[in-house]
Image (cartoon, rainbow, N blue to C red; front, side):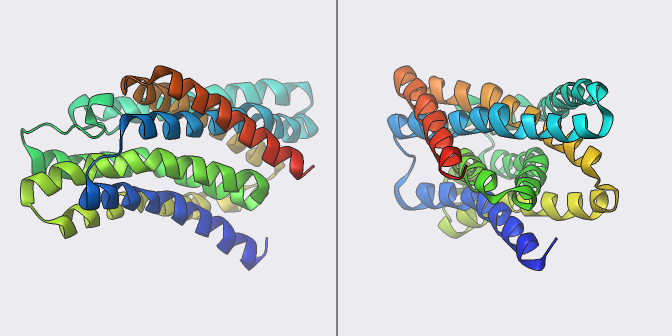
Length: 262
């Protein structure tokens, strides 16, 4: 692995994490985005992540494990996929609903109670929750940038409303635009942190088999994020059809981008 590959993968992860700052900037400058924009953007992100998970990342994991372990590798890949689901679901359940940035009511409509506390706790919740996302983006970048770029963009879109969820209550509580934006930006830095820590811990053990297991688990993580967080939040805006059109558009964009690099 060359230095440029490492730096490129890390840059994509940093971009995805820093997108929370965009959400903070939206809140600081002009308030919350419209429901139609949120529904379409989140639906698009879900479509990209679902398509790339089932059509590229999971098959890549199965391929690498099958080459190493034969038929048992297919079983291992399926097990790793659902283990990824369990891991991200467990992290999600550890975050109380009242501070979970993925609860639909948290997006753009913060409670008037305990605003500052809620904003800071939301930032911490995002930090915990986005840790595996950072490693997923980074690992995708190490393996194949044609997959990693759209994945990073999708996760970045997914992170924008998280930035809004952090910045909105802090701005209302303190009246400080700077503090609101800073907390939103800092909360996203857990993604590159997750990339670096995951790399340092797992890199000595990376073989075709462990890479295959990681890819299968990453696919499970992305599918769960899409179905549990992105789609429900998009539909909760009241723009159901816009959300569905966004999903289809996201799949089409991902499919086209992959076909162009065949």
